[in-house]
Image (spheres, rainbow, N blue to C red):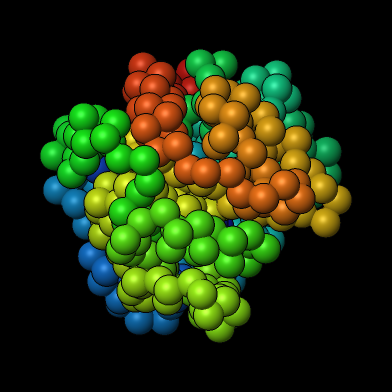
Length: 366
């Protein structure tokens, strides 16, 4: 099938990252995708396998399907084919030019089936996700009045749309394992951590905790806001604390980022895409949830920790890391955190992945 996927970049690591992984998974299963994005610049490092073809476009071919990125405001022409599925990622509205073109295409082929129109929502473990998944949303006005959109929610339970899990990931995960369970049990504290975060107040505290508990703890610091926060924290370390061993990691492709997570003992991740990749890595992790002014991130984090069956130390660490507690960071219990992550991954592997569920849903609606 031909899919139109729409992405408005708010944080190009997360929004575009999810949409590219979704597109790549669909292409690997034989589908063609037009990925509409208002800022595709991050694909230069995120997906270097895509070939720039000018005017804000890039193309990626697999042996089975194709992805073509198109600028958000670029109108389709008479040579462009109507698509079978429309996906609004994270609630973005479709461009007016696209809706006008789609209306004309429908008028030219009135007997053609209408595309399945989906609103792919944000990831959450909150209970409303189970209730809202696959609900219809009638379009009440505009050129598409009378059409039906469908809510499609990623999630962590069998009542949701699941997570992006590309074909062959279980085998790839097994080959990337660099830390056996016996080794983890023998370690009280991680030796190597990846850091991909916003600006957590507790970062300085975590750096001191690492310096005091290991002879040579190594930080792999991802580029962006977290790297700036790490640099600032370095200047604030007390003289009595050794300067931490660290490496500032340049922007990585999604494949190399996944390998980085697999190589570390503890992964600090943020947002949505890297959280899912940390789960697939099966290593101890700490999630920096996107902070919201209305405090909505608090219940969302607690719902996730409940689903995760997080040990007490991991829950308290998360709350402090996310600015939801004034309690000092607890000691890291690496064996318990690692076991928790492995158990969560095992549960998720038993569920149907997001793209498989999308394909089944679309088949039902067509």
